[in-house]
Amino acid sequence: MAILEAAQECFLQFGFAKTSLDDIARRAGISRPLIYRKFKNKEDIFAALFEHMFEGRYPRAEQVLLGPGSKQDKLMKVCEILLLEPWDQLVGAPMAAEFYEACERLLPEVEARHQRLWLKYTQAVLESKELSELFMLAVDGLQSDLPATRVLRRRLQLLIERFVS
Image (spheres, rainbow, N blue to C red):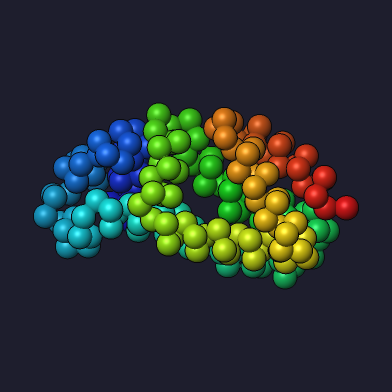
């Protein structure tokens, strides 16, 4: 866990390309050889970090879908869990935009899995694959200028009001 936390701080401060294993080791307070006991390389650490950021969120999103609440409430809660919570951890960091770009570039299969699950949860609320895909495209647009979390939350609320009647 300390390695992943240190890696996240380094990636967000320096960017993926400029972060070294030495940077991560120093930030975690361990030796570089100790990192190699758990991870093959920097890409392996990055993949583990991305997985760590989302894996625990999926069961929570599923619980929201199974629980009480209106469609608007459920969709907003799913967005809170899968978008706003991780966004809040990253936004404002010097290399936040590069972090997301690196995820897409280095981990296309992990990113694709995340998108499939998010589509599945969105479709469970909106009851239409086409509408869910359109909603997700709109959500991508809401993030393009890297807004503060409160701004993104408000944008999502407005979008959800338009999509869910």
